Structures are given as structure tokens and as C-alpha cells.
Length: 417
Image 1 (cartoon, helix red, strand yellow):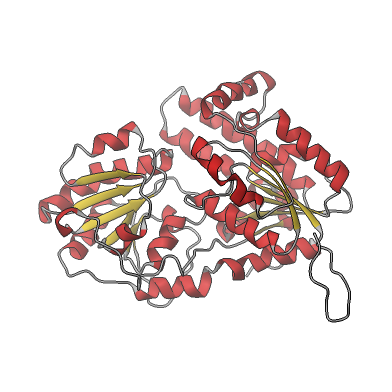
Image 2 (tube, rainbow, N blue to C red; image 1 turned 90 degrees about the vertical axis):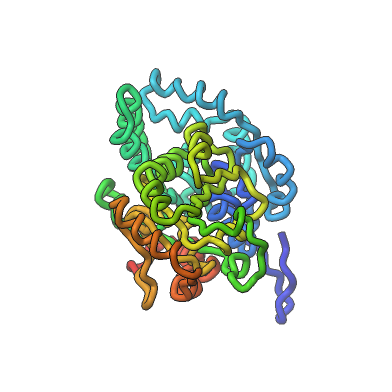
């Protein structure tokens, strides 16, 4: 790919970059896709990008051309989650983490091998741990490689094991151990391993001391021009009810766990004090446990919506009681960008930096979250300008991804900020 000639009549040729990501990085409508798309957009401005990914939702097939517009070549085979889950059970026979055969695909492996052999990319970027299996043992010696694990995924599985009954508790603990072994091995192969927050990077340094010297972090961002409270939106809540809102993919177990816990432990008390209060759960593919919540008075389950911003713009607060959370939560940043007061557990606030005037309610205790919600619901709607100021100052995508740009040019880890 050729750029415009410079003032000196020279022609600048972009370096080639291989980018492997576990899910088609578009549309940016959920946590990992928001990050992977913004990273793709950022990389495409600087490199000739070759993208290898998966389509795990048939609805995403319509966006292939959109992604192709950012790259020189795209390989995006479709995987069916049900078939992939069955395939993942091979890991019980091979002794590896189940996440690896789940995302193992012959077409993508062959394409990756061809790109490595024919294009000889000078830069390699892997987004999400299991995707590193496609380049393990094959990284060119003269390339600069970056392993963006996002979160310490093995610890997520360990948390599942602590909250699920046997035999799933055993299976999740096994996955945690096997996946951590893989993560550690991959980190030794790459020039740098990157996480979504300083806290996740610190955790991995402790788990993988042999790679601590080349482990660092980036900072998540949010599109503050899109999530702008000055824009006008119609109120989506029935009878303009005072609402608490939770946003996220509602087939994702940590989100399911969060809303079911809040409904059981906090919302009944809230309704006693504010009879017309509404707890609105906004997100695609709500699990059966979430759909059952809609049978309770005052709980609204929307399913997928074309735009979450009206729900944020007219809520009294974002209720984000995540018990299992890894890295920086997009749902928190989006609420902050919309100047929405935040009620959250400590895990949900991981990686959110202290900022003057920004004072969310943070507690593990249901009664403390409920009491804070009652105060907000019984008062005229207020906004949290400091939350948006924090987003503008600390969570801009382009500014934060400059850290990635420097890593890809030098291969050297910067001191922690």
C-alpha cells in the first residue's frame, strides 16, 4: 500500500502487520469488539494490515466489507458456537485448555501461514489469548510482536470455578490452570504482552514472573463524541419512570450474575421505597435467567436495542454490580461519558482512575447500593459532570493507543504511568 509522496518526492511504504482477533471487530457494540475495532482503525492508519478473525454471529456477516475496508487482506471463516463447544472438548483428551480447540480452524491457520511466508509482516498483533496459537513457534525473528491479552482470561475462569457448583467448578478450575500455562508460554514468545489496565498487568506479572519485564498495559477508551449527553434522545422508559440501567451482552455470564444478584438482593428494597422505580436491563440475547427477571414488578428486559444512549440519557443512575469483572468495563466508561451517576461493585470499577470530583458509589454490599439508588431515584435527575471530565481527560482512544504505537515501533516496554 503506497502513501502520498512527501515534499521531497519520496514514496513512503507502510510496513505490513498481521492482526489476529477472535471475533470480527465490527460492529463496535460490545466490550471486546469496541476495543478490537478501535485498535484496527488505529493500526490501519499506520500499517498495511492483514486481518484474520472469526464470524461467530451470522448477523455479523453483513459487516465483512466494512472490516475489509481497513485491511489489505481479510480471512474471516464462520464458526458456529454450538459446534465449537463440542470441538473444544478435545482439550480433555489432549490435556490443553478447552479455549484453544474452540478457536482452532484449519482455514485460518492456512491463511496465517501464507501471510507469514509470503508477506513477511514486520509487525504481529494478537488480540485475545487463544489466537496466539496461530503464530506460536512461527514469529519471524526480525518482526516486532505484541500479544494483547486484554484480560488475564485464566483468572476469569478461576472466578467462575469459585461461584459454580461441581462438576462445573472442577471444569472451570481446570480451564484456569491449563489456560494460564498457555498464556505464560505465549508471553515468553512475544516481544511484549499487553493488558487493558495497570491492575491486570500487575496481576499477570505475579502469575508469570518470567515475562514480567516485558508485560505492560494500554488503557481502554470510549467514543465521547458518540456518548455525548448534550445530544437529544427520546425517553424510552414507560411513563417516564425513574430508572436504573444496566447495559451489556446479556448472554455473558458475569452480566447475568450481576443483574440477577442485584434484582434479588437490592431491587426489592428499592421498590419498597420508590414504588415506581424501574430496573432496566439493556442488551442482546438475554439468558433465560434474565428473561425470568422481567416477570418481577419494575424490571424491564429490552433485549437488543439499536442505540443504548437513550437508556443512559434518561436513567437516574447506572447500576453495575459486577461480581466477576476483568479489566476496564466499557459500560462504566459509557455511563461516565453520559454524565450518569454510577453505582457499582469494586470489580466493575477496576482500572477507573481517581479524578477530582468523580465520586461513584462503590460497594460490595447490596444495602449500600440500594440506599444510594433510593436517594437518586427520590431526587430530581442529576448529572455527574466529573465523570465525563474524567473520560475526556483519561480515556480517549487515540491518545491511549499511542502507547501501542510506540511499542510496535520500538518493541520496548515503557515505565508504568
